[in-house]
Length: 333
Image (cartoon, rainbow, N blue to C red):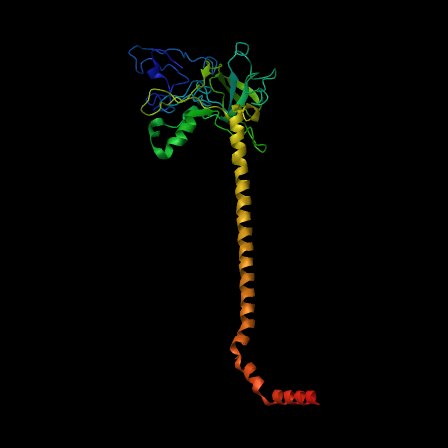
């Protein structure tokens, strides 16, 4: 928000202007404080939240903003409680809406001032109406952390979370059936969105105040960071849901190659199994031939060891000669 020529006199958290964070609410200081004129100027602060719009985060803290699917915004610090302190418990709701001429002035509350609880799924990602994407406690303006320590690594995350909010950071809440709480899913690339902050009194559950809808903020079509050594930007990333996985879109050559590669392990397995079977059969035949040869050798050894001479000498023994003589005598008779 631009506060005019005397922006340096706007009340803001210490170090906010020096660090490049826009001041949401401005209030003229009494004349005489940083002014040579006397008297006191009336407060030029508009009613809380009426003429204010959500703003993109400063490039000091979000250099790549917006991205393909996220948008970092400044939180409405010192917006709803700048003129007077609020008593009670309050929360700030953040609504998102796809920019459209028919929805630019759409309401985020019903006739009883109850804030809408529509979700990303119910509004088709903000295309049929606003959806609530985040809720956080209202930080009193006096408790805003100092930005002087933003470069302290140990406190950087704490300070950034206090000043900034990022839309589109939860990539799993839509697919997780057990997810509880507000879903802050990724935004669509190359799409214009509008944002609105709503102050809700938690005691009554009713809308206490709200900002205007932001100006259209467009997500990137491609990566914002350039490739090293090149002036060209990397090509846009195709969402997973947009990838065509239907086989009918594949060429004939691709299907043939896929089929061959798919069946190749089967043939390798069959060949391996056949090689094992053949090796076992060959080993069995070799063992059988060896045992048969050993049996033949064992049978032949006793015959070779016994001399053949006794068979010849047995012809010269007595008994066989006596028998021959008896036979000869019988023949003579």
